[in-house]
Amino acid sequence: MAFRGIPDAERDPHPRLAWLFESGFEFTVISVYRREAYFPPGYQLPPGTVVISNHQRDADVPILGTALCRRRDLRFQWPLPYFAAREDLFRRGFLTEYVAGWPPPVPQLLGRIPLRWFFEILRTRPIRRVREFGLAETLQAVRAAGLGATEPHAILNMRGQRELTSLLGTLPPQIAEIKLRRDRTALAGVWGLRRLQCTALRQLKSAFRATVTAQLHAFAALLDAEHSVYFSPEGVISADGRFGRVRGGLRQLCRLAASPPRLLPVALSYDGLGPGKLRVIMQVGELLECPDTTRATAFSAAVRRAVLELVAVNPSHLLAVYLSIGPLQFSTHELSDWLNQTLALITRHNLRIDPRFAEHATGAALEKRLHWLQRKGLVRFEHGRWQNLWPRNTQAGWQTRAQQVRYFANGLGDLMPDWQQALAP
Image (cartoon, rainbow, N blue to C red; front, side, top):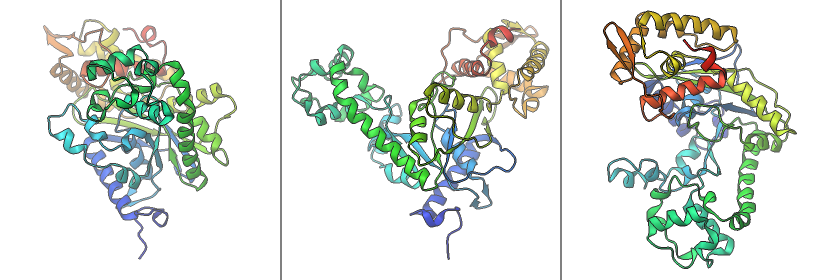
């Protein structure tokens, strides 16, 4: 009897495993996150569609992918797209680098697990990106280009020489003698191509581009075969909360397909400054015709606009703004009044607002958030007023609650560039 757990089971080499892992991700997402997905009327994910979204966390892809398939009971209504993922995920030992800070011997044990088969089942394919092409891979490419007998000083720039010297103690006379197998973890965050002399970089550029082009051709072939593909326009996770530069890969993919694919924009908006599970608002847009690919600037602007128009302003955005530029002391009533006035202003700017904003940022819900912020050390209640303790020189990130404040405030800056003047209490 034909398997019906996924719509395109007859085209999948491992349909039952694909359904099992997809279901596992779906249940994991809803157990860890409070996902609220909103779809346009008559939503569909037709064959040959390129799904695009903003990229803020590693969890974006499972959150987005499983929601787009729309599970009904134990069946998925739409096929899982093929996902473009960083190439180093497919390398043996990647988990050792990814969890390098965990207590030993966990990183070493996890590093023995091969991931390629896992990603194959989940329809994930590699795409090479400059940031994840580490120094170890770069030196391997240098040797493959016939430069193994060259002195390191002729290949590496001063920064690359310093980093390798600090790691190895001294540089060997030839590139071929540099052994980095045991030191990959120490170099995991090193952008290898940025450690090369310009002459060496020029010699590697053609081979590097050929690899990327071949990978893009593989994704274009999937579109031509009437599969959907997910491709992050930014190429990397946003480090500061802002929507990054649209990379050239998406435009090249659209140009390589036999016919211009339609785009399905999706926006993820995280509401993390509050108690309970991390809340994420996912807004799916209408299918769009592919923008004109002949002009890179216009194409990038159209993609950026399509995604940002869907981002929902949530309570964490506005609480982050208030902590960033608001008074050092305030009452709950003053904060509530500011939120109401700000919502009215945002509405006049035609920005999308979290559909459940009032439920999560008014009355008792606002009090709960303030007490949660107090437990996290961001505010303190004294003498009937709240003291703003957020350190205003904090950099954006996800590692600490203080960094998240800056991250969410930056995210609102994408939607309202003049927010510091427009929203000042």
